[in-house]
Amino acid sequence: MEDPLSRCRSVTRNDFADPAKCKAVANSQIAAGSDIVFQVAGGCGLGALQASGEKGVWSIGVDTDQTSSDKSVIASAMKRGGYGDLHGDRSPW
Image (cartoon, rainbow, N blue to C red; front, side):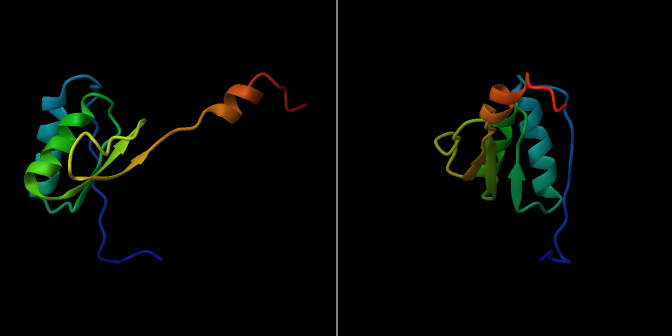
């Protein structure tokens, strides 16, 4: 069930290395009212997690368990490539 009061803000930095860039984006999203920051930008995203912790909002990490990266991290989205890696070479016909 969707909460009609929820909003999703999305910004692309086109950078996977500089944490300062993602920290700035996260700070602007938090200032706009975001309660949770979900970063999907590798090393750049560590800045988003830091911003979340500093501003007292929750965050979600990506790719690995990032709960040790900042106290704000409540979960991490982790990709599992096993099936695609195992069966990617099989033709469907």
